[in-house]
Structure formats: structure tokens, C-alpha cells
Length: 313
Image 1 (spheres, rainbow, N blue to C red):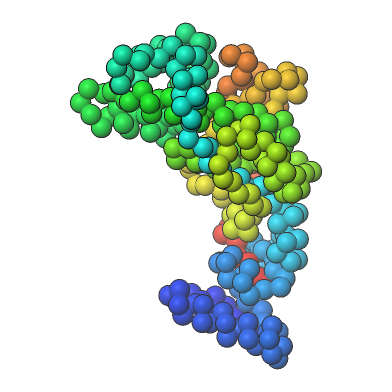
Image 2: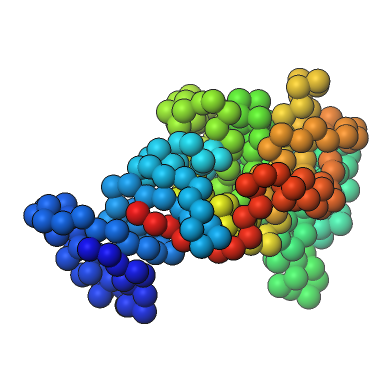
């Protein structure tokens, strides 16, 4: 049986019913073999025992089982976690460390940055208190009132989260080489790490052993999805034009990290970048790097993938 985009234009209920019918013929009754083409990785994963990804209208880039393709072409693992709320002892310790005032309940972001500067808080982190940055929620609260003030308790909670996130990033960067922050909301963060010859079991074990130290209340880890692999072959970035923070472990300096602004982890996979000292961290804008890497990528044989790919099983 040959099926070309069989679920195109179907609503979710009809699509599920069609999948059950096809699976009944092939997997339960085993009456026939089915070859189908689709752009839906969910459909391919649900129906197919083996699959291939084609580009340029017929050039196979890979073929095999879903797990084989993930193992061979997946860039790494995704980790989602949530930092627990600070205890009264944590709050007191942070207030003392950064000499935050106890006589009033709110302060401006500029005054907050002054207190952070007294303790040589990383400048790049203070710059993250911006729209879309790691301190986005503080800025939104300041803009929500005419005085432009933020509750000090919320600032303490942000410091609590950021301090533990930095510990997590340094540990992951040391073990996996590169860490990318895909997204965050308050105390919830989503990371991507390169596989670096380590299993997903190693990642689970690492987080489980450090759960108390990193104040993690819950977490989950998974492989790179089939959809992301499909997009990679179709020469698309993982997350369109969203810019992420990417951290790389610097082998020359034990406690140093390189920090980049990047739209995709691929352009930073194996590139050595210049080092600029800034509070034991290396900071660099990666836009120019990506353009150079893109040009090099397109010049390689069989690496220029510009047409939208088709998954064929």
C-alpha cells in the first residue's frame, strides 16, 4: 500500500482513526506493507518501523529505525527542571550577602544592580535583566507600576534561582562541553546539552546525585526529538530566530565558561573562539561566527540542504 501525505487536511480525531486503520493492516493483521510519505514526524514515529529522511526531492540522508536515527543524528539531550523556592534561611543568607535593605519592601532595578555590583556580581548577568533575558520577570514587574519598583522578595527569589542555575550550567558544561538555555519561566528552565559520548542515563544520574545541592524540585531528560533532526536536515534552525544563551566549557581555565548569544547550538559545536576575560567568564556575540560557519557548512560536499525535506518510510 502506497500512501502520499495520507493525513493532510485531517482534523486530529480523523488523523488518529486513520493511524489505527493503517496500524491494523500492518502491525496487527500483517496483511500488507505500507510505504508512506509525510512531513509529520509524529505520524512517521507512530506508524513506521523504519524511516528515511529525503531532501532535494529524493536524496536519502538517513535510513533506519527511529531510535537508530536519534542515536546517530541527534545532537544531544534536553533537560527540563525547576528550582525549589528559597527557604527562610536562604532568604536571610542572600539578604546578608548582597546587603539588601530590610527597612522597605520594594526597590528599583537600578538600585538593585548597585547592590549586586558591590559583590562583583557578573556584569553579563545584570545585563540579562532585560526583555527576554534571564531577569525578564523583574523587568516586567517594574514596568507594571508607575514607580518602576520591584518587591525585594522577588529579587531575592531571582538571585536564589540564578545562583543555582549557574552551578547547574557549570556542571553540565564540564561534563558535556556545551550547554544551551532553550527557555525559562520564573524558576523553570529548559537546557540542551551535546551528547559528548555520554548516555542519557549518565545525565539522569548526574542530576539525581546533585538534586539537593542544586535545589532542584523536579526534572526530566529526553533525547533530541525526531522533529528537530528533520529540521536540521532541512537546513532549518531548531527554534527559528529565537536567540539563546550558549555556554561552553573552557579547557584552559578550570572555572571559566564561554558564553554566546546564538540561534542554534550547531554553529558552536566544534569552534574555538577568542577569549575575553570578564569576571572569570568569556563573553562573545556569535552572530558573525554563525555566518562564517554557515558559509563553511554550505561549501561542504553533500552538506548543502536547502529544500524542505520529506520523511519517507
